[in-house]
Image (cartoon, rainbow, N blue to C red; front, side):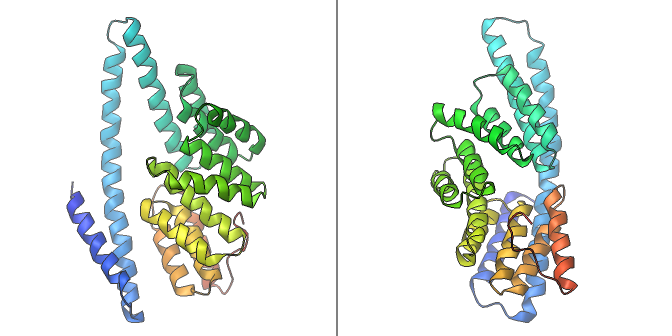
Length: 277
């Protein structure tokens, strides 16, 4: 790899130190460019690791080719289900809800007790606006595992999309407090930010959305909503910086939303007030 994690971390710490103090207006373009460059270097690592991950599938296929017995059969199903879950995650990130749902269904056909696959199937249904079906699927997970983070986040997000903001915040706060599941905590903070935007509480929204993009720097939808929160709070320069960062993230449909928001405000317009606008 061109950089190692230590070098990326050092650059992150340098930028974080700069942000911790007063940032003169003249220094902001360079600081924004440094953040974008750090994302691009990180994205390069992700691409390299994705290629390596595909090679691991060769090991999975080799394992599947072993002579079958009772124990191996069980593990075979588990390995196959995990592969479909990861492919489903990739489809979710690309905004292909139908493909994601199909992958999670495949995972469940191999491992019916896979709570993560079932919870993420609920996510795919939610993003496809099948809110009632998604809620039923995720509540089934919570009946078995009340502290399942991804299912809890989905229930909170569904409540938010249905306009039940108070209940959404309760579910999302519970998920965010369980730091053992990094993905669940990241998306809980993201949706909490969106929920507080829905309540016109921009300061709280900014706090949670900053947590989300700190936990997941490639979360383009986080940068999109952070920019909107900053804009509505009157921090137009900060909003533009957030959208510029989000627009530079590759392989995310939400990067296009960041670019569109930049175009809108640069043309004299304003971002939508609705979280789902």
